[in-house]
Length: 164
Image 1: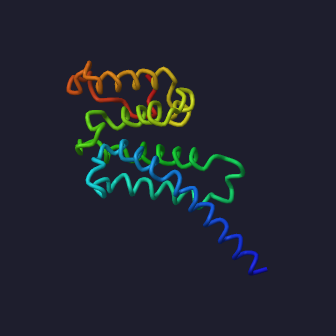
Image 2: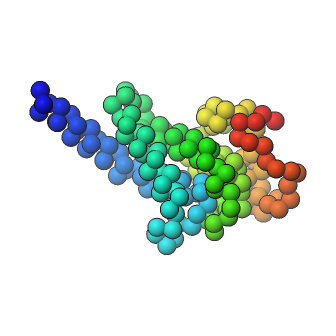
Image 3: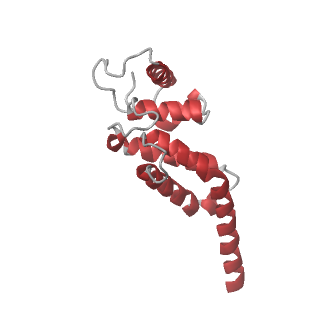
């Protein structure tokens, strides 16, 4: 009985290790974009690494209960949710690629364009209307293209859960 349990735990750890080996690089890049930290030199993205570690810990804790659910999708959802909850910590520019954007704009842009999550799923994940996701994504793209000044704002951005 004990041997079977140990074999099951070993197999679980091996499956999770294989998942992390395949997905951690892309998830870390997404987390780095979210936190607006520089990716170089290696190790400069400490907040992104902490965010990813927490998301992966949640996935590992639920590994046996996934039952066919995509672990990458689960981890990405956890990463986005954790970032949204802690977004106030990631407001100051850190020199990263998306540091001109607000945390909300970074989250929507990364989910929609980098991760390819459809508008409807992004809206459901963040608990906001699809129109709001579309507007935030368009505003983010305009800012990154330089067609909208990041300093010109019409007041503070509403919280992630607020409907417009």
